[in-house]
Amino acid sequence: MSDTPVKQQNTAAYYGQAVASFAVALLAVALGIGNLEADVWVRAFLGIAVLYLTTSAFTLAKVVRDRQEAGQIISRVDQARLEKLLAEHDPFQKL
Image 1: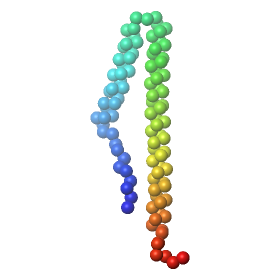
Image 2: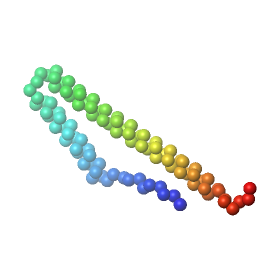
Image 3: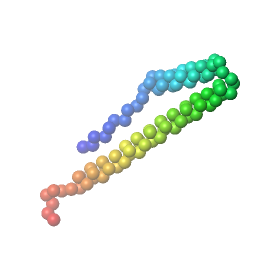
């Protein structure tokens, strides 16, 4: 018998909420930087910093997800090997 974990799927509402939350946060930061009483070069620097932070966050999320998926694949291969060995093993076979 195999106890494979059920892969969870995100609902459309959860996906929509995540996208909307990201858009609102990015818009709020952009408005905050735009209304900041500072020189143009300071606002440009902050804008570049926000874009860099955003792309870094996406990259980190992808790396973490890829590492988790690779661990699950290795675990499944090891589990399949163990199940095959147990299925082939006959404890009553004479040596």
